[in-house]
Length: 79
Image (cartoon, helix red, strand yellow):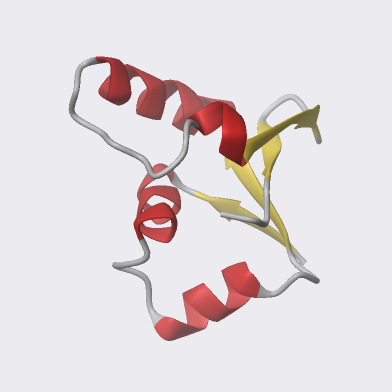
């Protein structure tokens, strides 16, 4: 299944908190492909540059460079 994460869901997933058990399970399922919009990446990069957001890994290490379409990118499963 393809899952599109919004910005908050991605941040909560990265931090290990804030998600319901069903959501965590769906994100951990290797059968699911995770997607993140370019707008979410842009938003997080701006917040990071302003010192308002810290992620465990740099965005470039968590997001694949391959685009699925013009609106989303694939999120690496190893987060």
